Image (cartoon, rainbow, N blue to C red):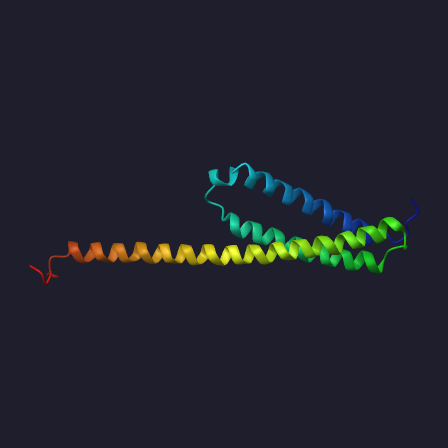
Length: 134
């Protein structure tokens, strides 16, 4: 109840609650396949940004709370939780980067295929270019 410099604790609470809510919403959307109904959003990039920002802010909040705590048991447990959450979000960020790279490569190859098909149709429709087999 007595907390003179509470800014570190308040910041840590804000970061952990924000990450919980945003990650929870994304988890529900992915679990129920609701993300398939909104194809305009790049969900892979959205997940990458969420995990990257959560990693960064959990790390900063954990350092701040470790520096400004009162050596109370709950605050020490919160610092340990913060660093564990940072590690878990960092692993998830690594996996999200890999998934994002794979999806961008897959999208690039699909665009190359569409471009090649379009160019082949353009050749067939232009009469000034004659085919050799005729």
